[in-house]
View (tube, helix red, strand yellow):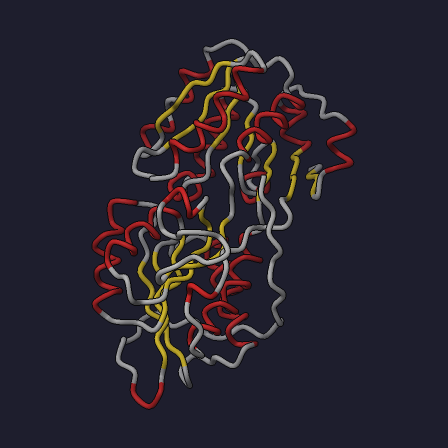
Length: 328
C-alpha cells in the first residue's frame, strides 16, 4: 500500500461559512467552489470547517478576500453533472472536489479551472492525473485510499471474526471507483479460501438486503467507501447489527456510530491539508506542480461494545494496535 509524506500545515482559527455567495470577484475577491458532500452531515461540516480553518491560517478571510460557492449532492451521484456545470459556469478561482465521482465529472466539465480533490481513491486509475509526482493538467489533491487496502480490511475482519468464509462487499454502480476495489480484493480472498459476494447499495431500499446476507452462514461484511454509504451509515450499521453480521468500514465515523471496526484515513486532516494547496493555487502555483499526496497513516478503530454484542473476542494484539478502542 502506498504511503506519501503529508505536507505540514499551520493551524488557525475558523472563519464563518456563508450560506449563499455570488461568483463575481470585485476588488480582488477570490472565489472557491466546493462540490459534493452532505449539507446536513455533522462530520461533513466538521471537515469543511477544517478546510476553512486552514485557509484562515494562511490569510484567507471570508468576506474580505475570499468567498465560497457550495454545491451539495447529498450522496446522490446522479446530481453531480448538473452541479459541476453550475460551478464551472461561475468560473471560480479554484474548486475543492469531494469523492472520486465528483473529480471525474469536474474533469469532463473543465480543463482550465484548478481543482483540488479530497476523499478520493487512486486518481491515476480514475484517469484524472497522469502521475503522482506530476499530476498534469488542472487537477491535484489528496487521495485517501489505495485499492490494495481491501486486503487489509479482509485481514482485520477475519482476525476478529475467524469463522467468516463469505465476505459480502457493498458497491454502488454509480461510483466510478468500485470495480478496482474488487480487482484487489478477490485474489486475496480466493487465496484465503473466502468467497466474495457483491451487494449493490445505492438506495435506501437496498440497505434492507442485508437481511438476505443474515441467512448466509459464516458471512461478514466489508462496506466500501462511497458517498451514499457514508450519508446512510446509521441505517447500514443498524441493518448489519440486526442480522448479527461482523463488518469493517473504511472510516472511523462508522465505528463511532456503532460499527464493529474501521481502518482508514482521517478526513478532517486531509481537508485541513487541502487548504495549503488551494492557497498556493490562489497565489499562482499550477496544480501540475503540486504532487498528489497519500496518507502517511491509517487509523484502526474498534468498538468493543459492538464486538461483545456479536459474541466476538477481539485479539489482544489488535487492541494494542488500535488507535481508538470504544468500550461503552
